[in-house]
Image 1 (cartoon, rainbow, N blue to C red):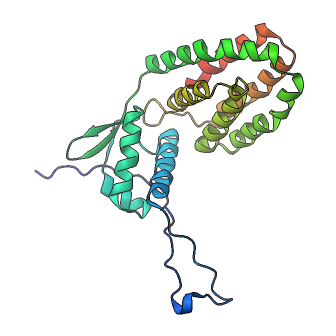
Image 2: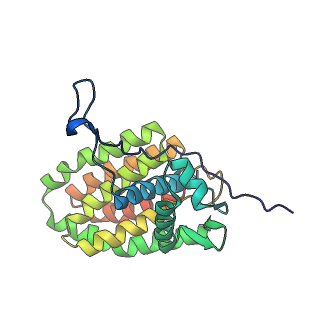
Image 3: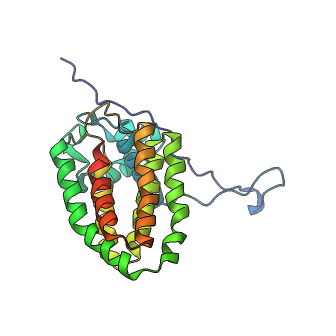
Length: 244
């Protein structure tokens, strides 16, 4: 009996580098300069970014198995950078290796999301409270464009675009602590909290994204006002609402 083929994802192809012009090492005015060859680690990085976006949007469906060659064909690259990127996602817990088949997207539970929210709160709430007391109000105003960018991304309903802007805002806030290890750990937890629970999970609903984004501006206002009660409440509710 023929074994079912792993499901393929519908993504765009990774742009391939053009070969350099050969005639006398020059180019004509009608021919733009050839781009630099894409380095291998750059291709892997592009594939990894695309796979992470597909995880957030649900294009990589929880429970489904995807093969390196099939995904490579979709991206227009060899299977090698796809496998390397998938190995990184396996280390992050996003996928698991299925011998002789490929990688299965991890199926997560509501309990796991709740645990992530709890850990994020334990790490970030004390930091936010300390920053509220030590960072000048003017610095919080400087972060408003990042908060507004999350609102703009939410308005498009594009879950992947919102996820990137959301993490950029949180990284900027936490970076004011001066603790790079904290920022790295918190960003990893944040990324994990953005993966959908199940196939068809409506995490990308525009109204939910807009509500989430609005909390960023409210948080900046509370931080600038040094309102610790509101800061703590907003951060906890923000993390708890990440699974809505």
